[in-house]
Image (tube, one colour):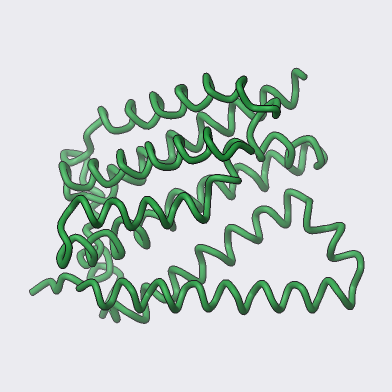
Amino acid sequence: MKTVPKAGSGWAFLFSWVTLQIIIGILYLLLAENHPNVSAWSDSPQAYLLGVILGLGSGLFLLLVFLRPKSIADLFDLISLRFCVKEIQIQWVLWGAVVAVIVILLLPITPMKGGVLYCVIERGRREQTMFYVTTAHLIAAFLEEPIVRGFLYKAFRESYGRVVAITIVSMLSILTQFSTLAGSLVVGTISVLGMCILLCWCFEKTRNLANCILCHLTYNVCLFTYDWLRAENP
């Protein structure tokens, strides 16, 4: 019988995840202090990809520790991930694109030409950046959803209900992601909050994390495409 995580597990997970991020940050600072080239490298597309891998990879590691699945199939069952064509609902993909378009329309009111990805693209060599940033976007969609919607949201929803659970994961997303999207507190908060609510609602309606992943992936691809076009056509 599938066990639904409780809020205690969610808070313990968050504490452990933050602790890991702090440890990674301290190790980076120590490395940068002893190797000046590391500081310069930190602005590169390669560093952007590495940051995504370390941040979400540590979360995925904790997910396995907390859930202790017996197999890959058991893990998918625990996080409600099913790759079934009949369960895929295309409207959620379209909603991901709609939210991305709204964010893109809001970007002109910020002092930036595009999102932070625009800056990453401008700093890197075009042929390298395409690979690193695209890979980061794919990884973010596939790894973030099992952690946030597949575990944390379910844990808090079980104990506190939908509204509180959505509020908690939304605040978490705003604190950790808004600066990577728009370079603006207002636009970044609106975009992350809107997308987080949409993904939680998607999970509520479909009970299949695959729809959340596709929605998130569409959103990321739309924003990346916009930033790429802005960088190529300043």
